[in-house]
Length: 106
Image 1 (cartoon, rainbow, N blue to C red):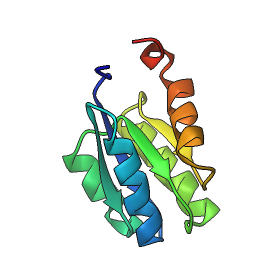
Image 2 (cartoon, rainbow, N blue to C red; image 1 turned 180 degrees about the vertical axis):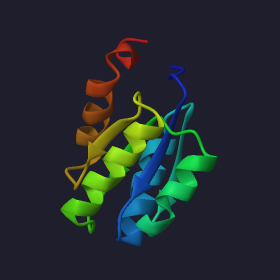
Image 3 (tube, rainbow, N blue to C red; image 1 turned 60 degrees about the vertical axis):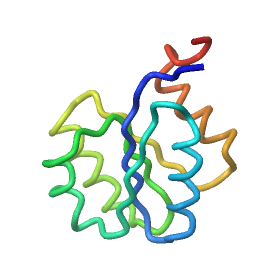
């Protein structure tokens, strides 16, 4: 099954979790993921790379998450933001499919 192409940015503080999320996302054809552990690099990244989905992982403060979401939506109001703090690959896919219902059944 060929999925719609999506470019993810995963932001968090725990390297192993970020790499696991990247691997899970990239198991889907057409989905790519970049990882940031330093939220101070976020705005620079967003100014260089087009992103469809921002995945907020563990270790970020609530204020940081709000700032990331506000800036992302100011760059592109179509960017989707998911707060994902665990729950397995099935939950992650369900969170993505909820935001992109057109992916289901293709």
